[in-house]
Length: 329
Image (tube, rainbow, N blue to C red; front, top):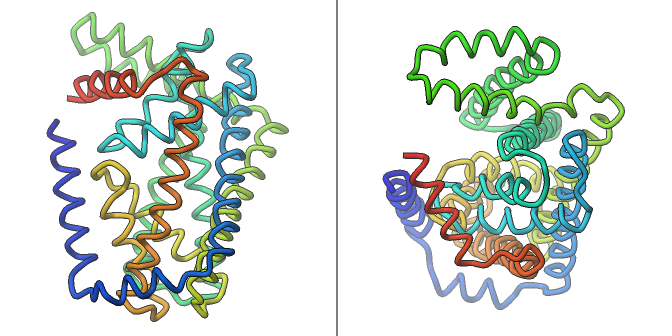
């Protein structure tokens, strides 16, 4: 509960910063001027992005066992619903839980595939960030944030490399520290870690890994295009590179655990990112409200559609979140 409370406080602070000095009459005027045809284009691109995410995750899962494409899509959709609906990113554990419930794949191994998926996302976003520097001058704070993000992903790369190509060495190192814990804990952690590393198998499969990497590039390219389509809806005279810069700022911003639905950090990130290109705060906030409503609303709707398919309910979702929150403490 401490993490949840802290996340809500952070959201409240970011909401305050986003709204400070805003003329709400101008916000209403901006909403009335939106070109709805571009809204539908953006929604279509976001839907395609969600489908490609499910396809990519299915490829990462495949070395561990067979899950039907429709079930992977359903689990992915409900998992993203949980990430959106639950505070402090507690929903990240729901996809592994649903995979374990639907197959012979252990929850810890499925969690390992989510770890790999997030790593590949990080590598792709870093590559896009590097390309944007050729077309736009980034502020110092964003360059520094990108450098920290790079160091973090390099550390993950070392861990993943050892897990795939030097697994006995990594397991021995981890066991060296784990064995100092009380016996029940050390056995449980050792069992969890072994299966968690099983989720990294895609890294050792060259042909399949290239397909996953290409899908990662396509996913984030479509994400940037969805943002650019929204620029057109608001009649922003911004270059395409601005959409990708905003995407990078948003990725960094929503990584902060906050209240459910990324409320606050999403809006503050949009205001901050669009401000780099001279967009007035009121216009940027109007854009943030619409973009947040579309992206989060689409995620919620698709997730709710697939809940019955998995024989899972909203009550089950909250019960799982409560268990995860208790375990996290």
